[in-house]
Image (cartoon, rainbow over all chains, first blue to last red):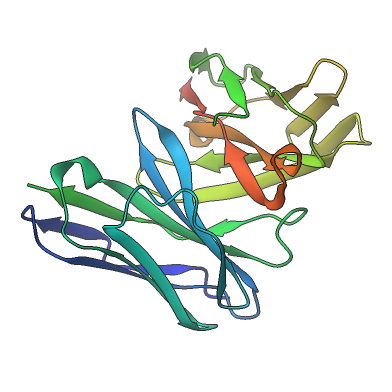
Length: 114
Length: 114
């Protein structure tokens, strides 16, 4: 079975540019999570969706970040405009009913903002 | 906010030895999960232990949970070089009103030397 698929795997762009990260969850999973991982702050939950509806976006750092899930098989995380401090690895994960189920992670997008 | 905190931050052992990692958390939980992350990859779920369980086994992994001390341990027996990875505990955020969310610690970096 295909796992969670993220694209691109690496992204290098200049400050001020728009960045779009993409995620395809595992088919049938009804929860989707976006995380950010840095050495300083560890793994932080940014936002999560249930049945394509955003449930909790309290982890989104600021208005420059937005996330959408137009259908059950696709989600995007957008940063506009990007800043050097946004450099991190961004992970998408999906699961069935979330609280007592394992989350399945993609291999992440390594984002570098110059 | 950080819920789980792993200890030690780094651990280096010889192949064949046992590795023990600890996790402490602050608030009540429904369950606790352990994940592994190989370098450059996403997190992989290892094992889930519920709050009413004290011990759980999966292959060479043994997890214990002490809810009175708010702590858990992960034991890897007869370690192999392939076990080299970072290990994270994750707790559900039940006490913070969101049981769907997982809160991850910063991880223990395990190195198994051949």
